Length: 129
Image (tube, rainbow, N blue to C red; front, top):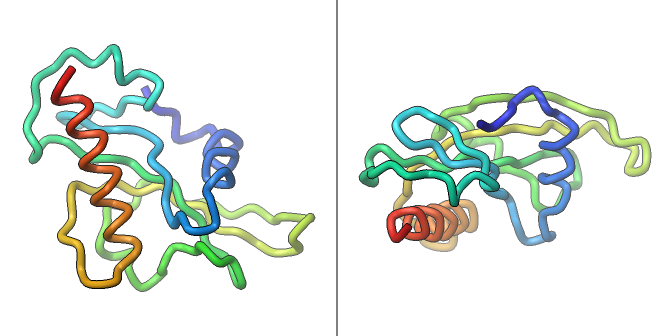
């Protein structure tokens, strides 16, 4: 089960993103139950695309090159938001977890491309198990 209260873990994973990654997958949700990516091999339930979502972690801050586009917040199911001050970078970073099913990729939309890529990879991985 995914632990939304473990802010340190969420920050650690989100901060591992490459500079071109806006989001990073944290968990999957099947029929409303959330599974950590480490638990994927233990999932033994049949599902369809409509009952499958992926939970992502992201962050945004001033001058952060891979910040989540704030104007897209309303497009997703926001699960958790918290802020932390980064002493090294001297800025406040807002961390967020959100869920999404698959999305239609709009032209030159990096966020939609990443959501679609991760959704397809995780959905197909679990479906084939």
